[in-house]
Image 1 (tube, rainbow, N blue to C red):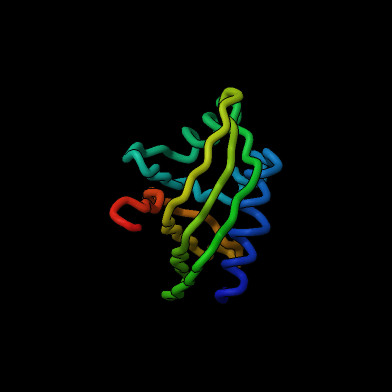
Image 2 (cartoon, rainbow, N blue to C red):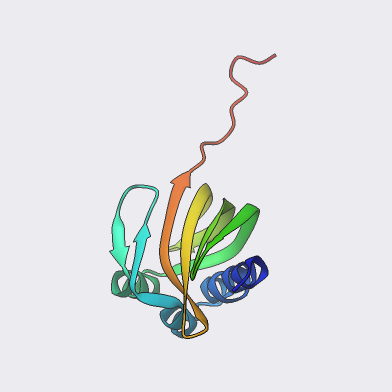
Length: 130
């Protein structure tokens, strides 16, 4: 495992699976004890996330990863960065800008996504400027 492998896995498997609604690839990527902590504080397990994706009428239009940084510690990789997404849920479009922390673990020479947490980045404001 190296930084490039982690970034490639995140972009080419995780992000593409969300964009193409490839829930089978996500199910394979997620560790059995995967945990998602959303920016509103809700916590979902692997089964919760997959059920929500399959039944929640969620359609990702774009996912952009920026300012990414990967730290490797033994068989664990911590990926941090900023993300912008455009998605539709139940026909309602939304845009998100958040910081993310993901934890990947290498098992049997395969990367698994163990943990994902996001924190909203508020929109910049021009209040008080001239």
